[in-house]
Amino acid sequence: MLPEGFIDRLSSFAGNEAARSFAEAVSVPPEVSVRLNPFKNPSAPDPIFDGAREVPWSPYGRVLSSRPVFTLQPLFHAGAYYVQDSSAMYAGYVFRKILDRVGDVSGIRVLDLCAAPGGKTTDLAASLRLRFGDDFLLVANDPVRKRAKILSENVALWGDPCVTVTCADPSAFSALEGFFDIIVTDVPCSGEGMFGKDPFAVEQWSEALVEECSSRQRNILKDVWPALREGGYLVYATCTFEPSENDLNFKWILSSLGAELCPEGKPDFPEIQPTDCGSLLLPGFVRGSGQWVSAAVKTSPQRSRPPKKKLEEILPVLRSGIPAPTIKGKDIIPDPDLPLSLGYERGTYPEFEVDESTALHFLHRDSVILPEDAAIGYVVLTYSGLPLGFVKNLGRRTNNLHPMDRRILMDIKA
Image 1 (cartoon, helix red, strand yellow):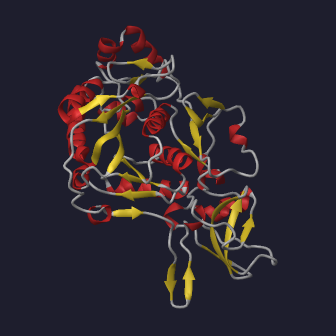
Image 2: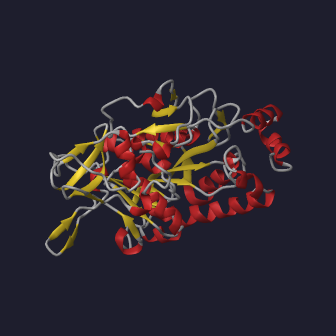
């Protein structure tokens, strides 16, 4: 059941045909899609990709033929892919077009402002690494501590050491005047794109919520605007179809904050609907859950003085760089996330390849027994050639170093 009055409201700005198509699309189970990590390639094909098709606007996006139990997929825990709606991948497509505009910039700085749970962050990170190697900084922020922790865990699995995860209110970034070359804002919205997945999104929707979100979005953008350099780029995305949260707010950005519309924000695919300022991915026309995306270049001037503070002086940092070891007496204990990092040098520690059952028991945080010929001490377990994490092999038993709060809670068959 859709919220009362929603279809009439959608018809008023999208048309009756679009509203009918949307209602039909959200009445069936949503498709499941993932985005591959181009820097973590398994040694053997994964059966979950049998029959998968490519997402038109994402070179690493795949729509699966069926939904696996991702919790029981070791390669999911190794960061080989991220589960993300195909519509949400369009923001990454627009971002890559903006990178083409930017060109070769040494030490490019990007902010993903409302980043949890990490879908766009991991997409941006892959795009930046493919273009710039290690020569970039991506700050992924979420102001809600619980959500920021989830973001940090997903960034750990993805493994890019050039991503810094922070937990700060958007207003905190105003102290970093002109610091960022690109800011991506997937701002909180009324969430019609979640109707097919989340009953709470249906329950909470109201016209009052739409107006509340529209106002909140303007406040967020106004707060973070000083952090974008003059000539820098904004990528603005929502999972709502409401003009007051999309086109009208974007026009307010152009006129009140000082920006010009970028043509990269307009659609390149026939199934995506053009709007006054951007691209609307509406269920019924696209097979994902929906998204609205646009882009602008900042024209308002910044003051010439340097930022008031450095990044680390104003933001609670949850994760940054290559995970460092802990020293306890004479023992140097490696960080559990080190093998997942793209900055980890393979061969630093002995590795041992395990089968699926052993991998799942490790991820369940069971004590894994290794053969007699396995190295003693800290050993990296791998599955399909990709690191999963550490055990400390004591010979007859092992200590499992997999993080307790990331362990599989489902029962694992012997």
